[in-house]
Image (cartoon, rainbow, N blue to C red; front, side, top):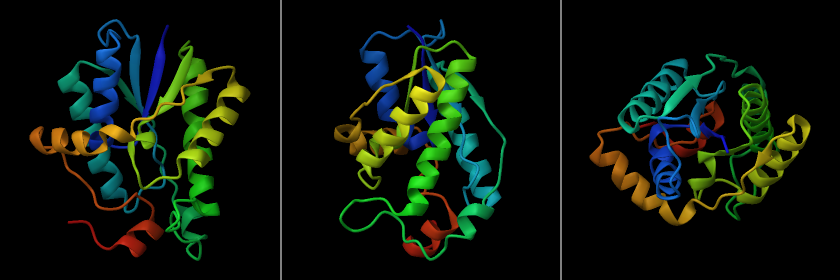
Length: 188
């Protein structure tokens, strides 16, 4: 079995990688590969910083890793009136658009590389709408004939953050798009 892991950033990948290691997936043989696709991270320098740290973590863990350099935050700037994930944990229409875009790209890349399944590190964050992510993943997987793994990485969120700190990874303070930066304050 071959699985593609969509990676939003290094810190969010820490715990999911541990889960897959514990299951015995051999990173060196390509049973698990990492895929960075986040075209709406604001600003572009932030996207580059997140990519650099995700790549660094993949190298540290011996994970095959690739990235899609696409960058287009315009659709998300156009939706500035939509809040980020609501206080009740449900995603705004803008967040759902983001989830769908990322899961579509990951499912497509999984199919192109011959992976049987895919999942996302976004499922580690307690700040994301898990149900909306699962829906987006299932739909994208069905379109591309690749199974979406409905992982629950959330129990390891704090552990992953601790690991990222120990590994010296940059840990951002907002989800990524321009609206989340405006809503949650400047990075620190």
